[in-house]
Length: 291
Image (cartoon, rainbow, N blue to C red; front, side, top):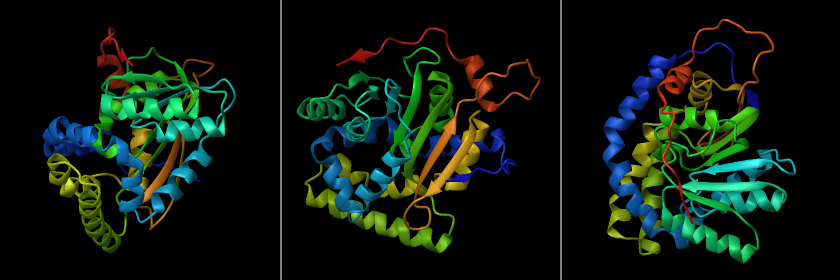
């Protein structure tokens, strides 16, 4: 993995502007259309991703799983867990972890729990909006987020992930990102539109899913490059940030970032963007609905 540079070329104001632009463009889609898509796709979600990516989905998921360090007894939170595909792979890698899955889609998690029962493993399931995690501070040793951040408000999600990690805990992220090469980006986004449309037709997707065909490429176009996402993690208060790109010039990348350990002596430092969010966070968080 490549360690993120110490000197940042962007600041928290840049991050806030970027997230504001993403919200203005996609907030209605995130609230209405995307939940309907995930009501439709649970039974063919993994197969659909394999078809749409021409099989490369499986390659990068296993690359990501290999990058996640797990110890027996670790408390692991899988954010936007979907159908528990990642969680099941993590349990195969290290069966002696305590895994919690959180997702706002009851339909995705219902299918994920069916898969967990078939595999004979336990995954605690929480149905809740991941922008406000219903867990105490310092609750988890590891947090994972795969193939979902394009549909999320990172200025809300990342501070929450940092909050629930214990000091020294590690956040692992994997997603399709925006390539830095403009020509590659142009080819990639057009391929994505065609492949998503073809996959929706092949699996008989609902009208809601078909209407989101262009959204999936638009979301990547408005998202972050691997280097920019490294800087976003630093802006949100993470340290020891590492990034490794996978296929096609950074279209998929893996990040690992640590919640800093408390200093042995009090230190004066400039507040991070995440500190501002932490101060504004409500003390009382809504109770999760468990399944």
